[in-house]
Length: 436
Ligand code: GLC
Image (tube, rainbow, N blue to C red; front, side, top):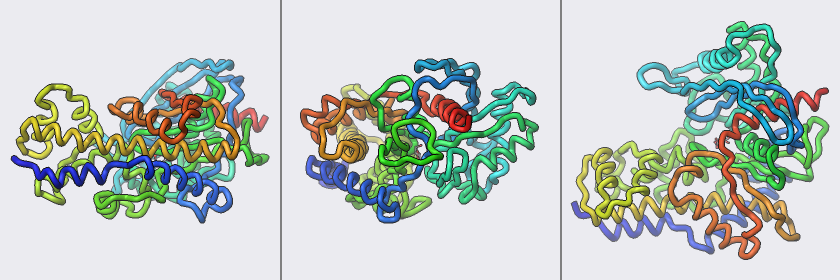
């Protein structure tokens, strides 16, 4: 079939962020941070207090870590040995959705079912030992309002989670009740943190000069240490980590498809940046563009970020793998020239994602730096899009260069694989120390 070249080129153009637009997004992000620090109601960033600062690296002890926020739930027993060292003693994990069997994130599931599932997994991690005392750190990767390290109330589900009865609740209270139901009252949830915060704690535990934590996966979000906030409830050093919920950032210029996509999503108007950049949405957005090219607008082909990644990895001369994926999802046969074009569109979408994410990083760096010189620093990132999607890492580096010029040499992104679990254990240790 012959694709409309003009339409394709206009789609590629719509998904291209030029240097000027990139700088504008970074500047807007910085401004929203400033506004949000003054009053979160004036900003699209939620600026959520985490009640932890940075760890010292000397935290020790054995803790349970619950990592809940993506498609898989993991529970680990982690021994912190201090000096940035740790050992994972046990690890269990299960998906929240098994098609045809159960789905704990659907609108017809209940909070009780969801938390019973979590408690069951925790019980497995402790081998049903209901005697030994365990402190548990909980990485709960959704926007939550906190008044201390324990007390996190879910503001709103993101990432298309729909389970009723959790929004507006203190999540660790729900967890405690479920732990009681399985008889594991010896497990005491003591800290709740966002996954971005967990990644930052985990990276900072192991090496200095890390002040920004980021998740670039199903969802996309960043946190950073705000040196100016001191609070008696705050554990740790260096200030307080703020979870920006930057997936909700909206001082952007969405294109025609972004707007349509948002309208059709579970929560229109929310998580605007996330819908343009994260793994949960990129595949669908690509499918939406393709449906226009195939003159089947509105048809949902079910593309995922993994499909995008596979297409970008196709290095065959005639685009065999791209053709196979497109055939599988859309039923259409395309020739090698069309494969090359479709790859260009996928490339544009992924590069846009990396550039917008970097603009947020730079907005934070500018805010932290003020009028001084940028400090040597790492940005700790975890997540499948960062780790595995072709083109992402090099385009982050390129955008950092574009925005920071020579000073870009002082900033790099580092993969903090598994930080969500380790960070929860560190937060639990920090909570125990804070109360001691
Ligand atoms: C979504 C959540 C946020 C989380 C991110 C990455 O943006 O709202 O809390 O950090 O996904 O998992």
